[in-house]
Image (tube, rainbow, N blue to C red; front, side):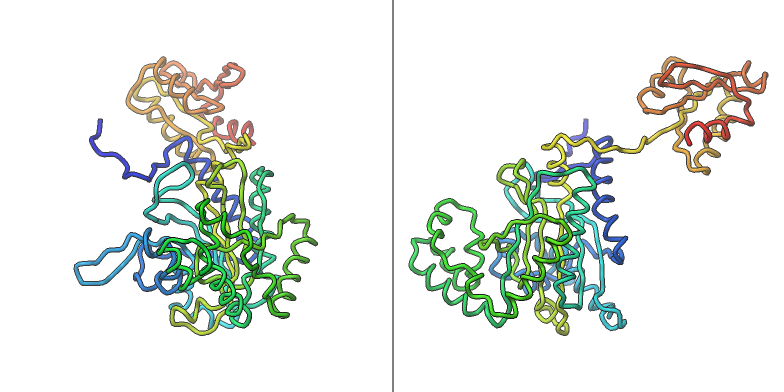
Length: 420
């Protein structure tokens, strides 16, 4: 047994469970690909300043959770704790916004890293699928992304999730609310760190999960009461478009996101079957992020959905995904000539798009058939010297147990016909 183990707070994806994660990623990505989003992949680490500026220097992600390090060349890098800043950086660097077709629509899938206290649903290494629409200020774009996320979850068979929706205002109305909230927070019994956070970004205090803090926030001023007319109209259109699409949501005036770059539309997908780690995904509009990281003004909106937590949500609802069989045909050769012939047939089946496997290692019939059973294959091809002398192989239906001889030269066509 190996003396090495996966680092604390991480996990390995291994078969058969890994097939669930792949299916979830595919289900989330499918509606995005059908809606004009192109795939983007960014490095697993970036300049520390990208996240300090974009995510926010007062956030727990930057102050406590980021894996930062210095390279031999003296560069300060960090493992990416989230995807939006990296995707926007890549889009700006490649000048995608200058191609004349805004918004730039991108989707991504990958691993992210945060130094957090490990618990079920919260890991130090986790997987997300995300989408970003860069360069357009349009309520229909916000609505589109919420609808696509809802569509992805519905396609997986999830039903017990809720969509929470709020508006965080913009640079015109948020400063007024910020001042009012700070005045309120200064009158509470808060620890020094929380008071310091309130001076830098008071909205972050509303996101504090500690009961001792939440108890004192009951009478906190609400941002919706401070929204300017433009933000009110924008938010109302988002709500109307989502409603018209048949997507249910809940207005949550206290909803804020844990990242500093959000403006106007903000939303979260929660699943009540997951306990304290109920958020399975979320996102919103971030109109000022491009300028924060040195780019031009590019109003944008996006989300990220957690693959890990989506799998947990499926388990909480008892949803069994219909996963394609990893192997449809398993070949069992008995003797050297049969190994040569059946290996060629397996190769031909694979070329024709049939999932096929082979009994390796020269096992006897009993051991090879055990492997065939474990593979989950619908059909097994068995051949020995006598079969080949007669120009046939034995085709066994693993469900019915029926076994019939089929010509060696007809076996591929026969299996293709049976498997459809």
